[in-house]
Length: 229
Image (cartoon, rainbow, N blue to C red):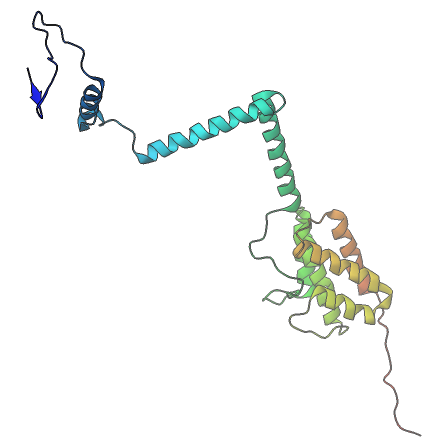
């Protein structure tokens, strides 16, 4: 007999044969745990990253499984819904264009850092229009309109002037075209700051305004006479 701490343990081998006897459950489990905890049994276990990766995909699978039971048509219904959502996002992206990282405000200057003549702005606008780049074409044509008014001395050249300010000032000299100038400034602001795409009609309206202003006669006002005769 084997003794442990003064207690008599049951024999592991029957006296009449070689077959093992029933081992108590708790010592057997502890012995198995000690054996399985040896490093040789865990050499091929997945690491922490692999376990996290597998847990994530298990979660995704459970989520899709749960959604497929709730969505009409099961898994096929989910695929149709996802495709429809992707199509909607693509349509919005195409319609609104790429989001601006640093959105400008309507208070930004109408012109860039390099001064160009009205003729140069017109040439650039026509190049953009020929390539169906309507946003850029509208912007350059509006710049041509304002620069032309400055070249004719109907507007005083002023750095930092906005399209709205130019339209308001130009409308005082050319009241017959004041409404068209305001509409042109709104079109420029919508394209430049509002993220709205222009089209060929918007560009043609600006081009027609530009051509009409070339022949427009300004409203001249005489300074008030002071003093008595």
